[in-house]
Length: 487
Ligand SMILES: Cc1cc2nc3c(=O)[nH]c(=O)nc-3n(C[C@H](O)[C@H](O)[C@H](O)COP(=O)(O)OP(=O)(O)OC[C@H]3O[C@@H](n4cnc5c(N)ncnc54)[C@H](O)[C@@H]3O)c2cc1C
Image 1 (tube, rainbow, N blue to C red):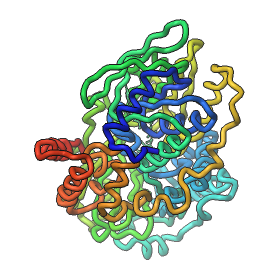
Image 2: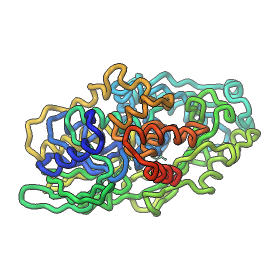
Image 3: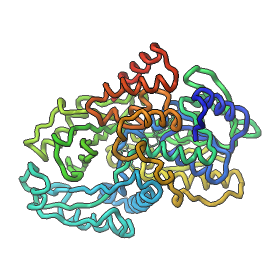
Image 4: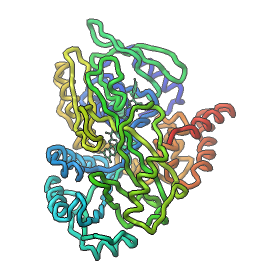
């Protein structure tokens, strides 16, 4: 846990810790995969450090669809192994983080002549429940076209022949990262945001990783017996990486629920692709796109063609709704760190993960999904323990809760918490928040959820200024950083 030290003292101490001793495991990347590995590694008694070049969850892990899902789409592609794995993991997350796993019913309308025939889906959702050992969030059921029309007034009735209801879980991706890291820090992992690994070389004792504190560009060396590359879409840019990533971009847009009034999530299709609309408190977010991406990972953003694609699919299902760009409250765009495979449409590239350890202790953990992060971490740490030749205890991350009872109240959940000075203070004191966008985007999602987010950001900036001792100039810099953040 971040101690009640002032933030710069705490940070100096953490850097000193990393600089002075030799770690067993240095994790590079503070997304969900890195957070999961740091937690598991620390829980098994390995001396663990984690560095993140930006804020924790800055990358894909704050830009997903926030579903805990086996992936009905992967079932349609015949990938039963992957669906089974992810289906069991969504239940594990419900157990260890109930505040970040709420039932998410989906209505999936079907149309005659579409590549998603009604009979196939009826069988598919039953199989989906079975793959969860019948312990899914709830049981799937077939729906008649009359029932679909009453649940979804305004739905396009042309060739509608019924549908199904099935269940996944709704989560909060960035909160899952932060709460996983809080658990890791309880087990004495040293965690630092805004520190980038720039180079890694080996001597006869282990790895020497040249790292840079991006706040002041000071460089220091972190010594570690093993290095974990958990850099997500950046994974093939790290010096000793053995993986090749094919990044594909996915966009979500947010509209008011009063504008798109759906009782439950709705699955829509465009040929073989799917687009979902997911209720999120007073909002609904809709996504996603899936297009090859080769631009700058630091500034991935939503383009007009992404918006037109999503709104085009909504229009084909709800022709009279007339949602346009002016209805958008916010958008987010992320890059899937998929393991490269030659050719093929991005939608059919495998979502499975790869964990490879080299004979000199460099481990790559890439691909996968938010839902399977804990399993990826377990596999990775098993390999690290073997490499280190340690008599470490077995993995317990599937049993132990991320947070203690009552701890998430007012600060962590699927829906953003109320805006309070206490919450902001908590994020600064206990959750490593050092910039305005850390709080507005990753800790709370206020930026994407509140229609008056900019006014709220002014207030949050004042509270953060009081806590961190920012002067007027710093407050202006923070404001600029926040408004320039790519959406
Ligand atoms: C649009 C979209 C929707 C998705 N929806 C879902 C979903 O609903 N359910 C699901 O299960 N999965 C979903 N996923 C997949 C899931 O979000 C990703 O698989 C997961 O977040 C990847 O996590 P990660 O830790 O590997 O990568 P990231 O979260 O990107 O973390 C990698 C981190 O490494 C840091 N880093 C990079 N280089 C360095 C360096 N040199 N030094 C220090 N740090 C470095 C980066 O800043 C970054 O924060 C979705 C993905 C996308 C894009």
